[in-house]
Amino acid sequence: MSVDRRVFTAEFTLLLERFGRDPHQLLIARYFEYLDARLTTEEFTAAARKLFEEARFWPAPVEFLHAAKGDPKQLAGEAWQALIKALKAGRPHDAPPEAIAVLKRSGATFRDLEEASEHRLAQLERAFKAEHEATPAPAQPRLLPGETLTLEGSS
Image 1 (cartoon, rainbow, N blue to C red):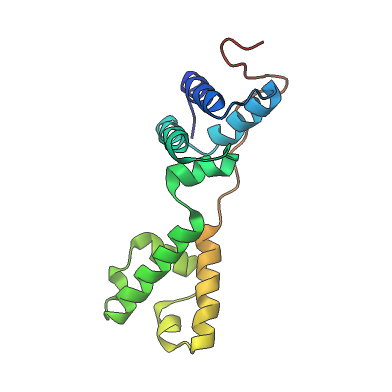
Image 2 (tube, one colour; image 1 turned 90 degrees about the vertical axis):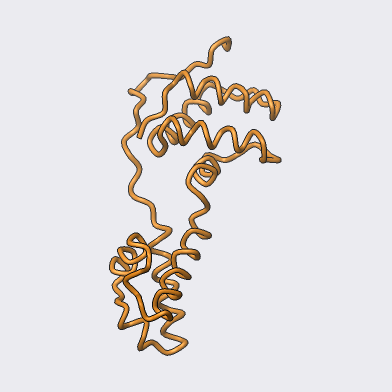
């Protein structure tokens, strides 16, 4: 993942203006480091524009991820529902491949879902959602030690 610095500067400057912010350069650098490790330039641009249009308050870094990729809790719930729908239709392998992979990573199988009591099914659902929401370890920061990111026109 990588966010083009010029694109970041332009979009972030617009957000700063919209929300009337004048942050320290270290804060801007931290935002860039976080977002650069997790988003592409296209994802960042889409997220920044969505936040510009919809956010009521200054966004935390994770809100850029949610704007770009969706809310993890909501996505986990939708994936679980897709699994259950496919299972009830008698065609569990028609569930989205990503959901099937998460089911396996959570340590469960379709047979476990079919045979589970209501209580056990709730446990399996929590494990599935936790696995779905889990994010990979963040990529290494792209800023070199001592390097700072400066927005154009700022001192």
